[in-house]
Image (cartoon, rainbow, N blue to C red):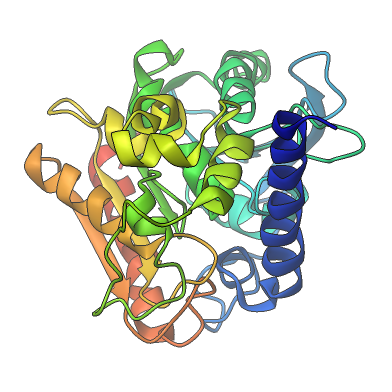
Length: 338
């Protein structure tokens, strides 16, 4: 086996370990479960029935096996127009399903929005070895016109949207909101989510799981090939350790780095991150916050100083984050007639 193929194989092995074993096995307290398991005495769920809304599942948006979405529409007398909220599932880009988010999608629909959960092709060494964050982001972009068209077919005119998600889904939501918003079939008004990687700078990723107050500095003489292999698997571009020294890798990671697409015209954001995250780079969230600040974007950033990827130790602040999401929806995407 050639050295190049060996490196690619190594990258896939590391991808599998970090984003399947570590992410899935330790996922019991993760953000997606916090958003769907109702930890706040019914505050973020609804008793779903025909008087609240109706759901349509497994609607196709493409030819791929995973190219399906679920749509939730409010009951009652149809309004002139509706806001669409898309929420993308977690799972480390290798697992998860739109059905994982049924509870939050129903809850948001009960507030008067059309909501949608969208599947995307997951990376798998055996079945989908060519899938990566970039290809997944393209699927999300291509799905949106189908989601809007299906809502219109059911009598729900969509004139604006918000997009959010948890972890991997949050990363994909930010990519859509900041890289692809100008191609959206309806205007994107805001984005929200928890613990999604917003960018890929080596100095942040070498500090995963470390003390956020004492980050380790990047050493150009060290071998960070393991991180290069992860970046390769995630981006679909060949990244080498030498590129970290020259900075060449940054342009190759841009297509999956939402932070790098933020400008003065970008949409508002509500985000939450755990300081002790061991599954994505907390330092990347600080760069996201700085980009939003530098460009004058209206944003809310919640740093949960006692939590890791699951945001499990800051329940009070997590509730504040969720209420802030609703507040921003009321401001930037008010329900028709309110």
